[in-house]
Length: 128
Image 1 (spheres, rainbow, N blue to C red):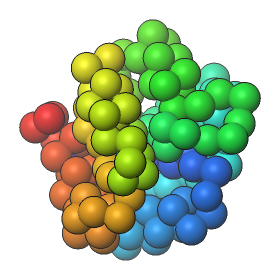
Image 2 (cartoon, rainbow, N blue to C red):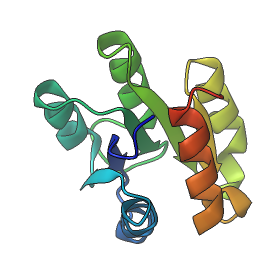
Image 3 (cartoon, rainbow, N blue to C red):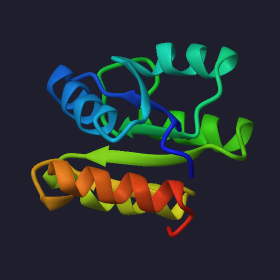
Image 4 (cartoon, helix red, strand yellow):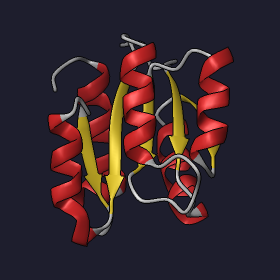
């Protein structure tokens, strides 16, 4: 996958949006961030993204599982990675069973800068 891949990051926590954006922009990806699911869905209606990275639990109208479902039902060529907090790995695994291409656990290696680079590169190259 070309490093110019377009990635949408959806999380209601600014610290996570900023970390993921900063890490992936240094890798050459084009990053768009939003703080809620409703904005994400509106953006997807008018923009193509190769990858959506979404938090599972957001205090917004549409949460991660709704974004996952919407993306898989409407954009067959868009991959989805879900973000989850330490205590909700079961939910992330459940999301993977529903079609997510991978998951990042906040606070574990997968959420480190290198972990984020690795999972995104693997998903975009079709290895997961």
